[in-house]
Image 1 (cartoon, one colour):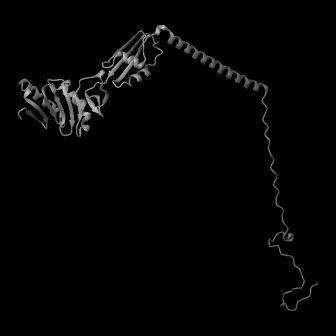
Image 2 (cartoon, rainbow, N blue to C red; image 1 turned 90 degrees about the horizontal axis):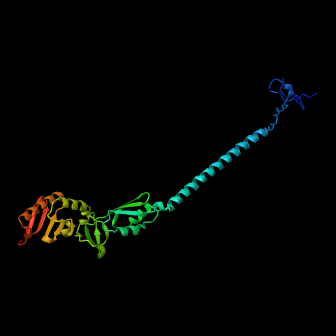
Length: 306
């Protein structure tokens, strides 16, 4: 029994050393107080083991049978390919060693400055060789190393003939470069050095100031010059000069006549020059003329007494 405290206000009953249990604010189950509710237990995961069925004897036998059939097929294919390769090799050996395919004739065409003997020595071809054993492509490459040969075609005519068609480069001039004379084609490109064994009487090509730009016109110029009907051949021209100021210049040695053709509208200038030369030749006055220039739509002549 507690002792009343006189210091407390009236209307309120309080006791010293009294104990009151905490009130459960949840309302329901207040009598349970703060008792903890245990958490629900989670069952542990079980490991699942998968067991594969063992193949039966019949299944293993089928697999082995299929594997053996595959190996047998591969072996048969290998034997077949080996037999084909061996047959091809034997056939090739027979053809390349049989005298039926020995070369009995070699025909060389298109060569003018190179002898047939030089061509055969260069490519290593001789009669008596087997026509199937020679490599035509390698022979063509060897011949193209010759500076005079522009193109070559070698054909095999079974069983015993070889045809060699040559296209040679045609020189139009002789030009001096670093103290050496060279043959020059109509395009102004070097062919080969001038030698005593291949000497040709050709006009000397000279490149004046600014003439390099007009050098690609030389080939077309020579063709138009031939068609113009001049009373002389290009072989009678002793020198040929190109320059930006004078254009194309030629010297007709037998007539001691200097011809000059302007670069602008040079094709028309050639026609006018040809007409004038034909006229003075008909009048037999060529010997009195020392120079003729055709340029700018006009033609000028220089005579001995001028």
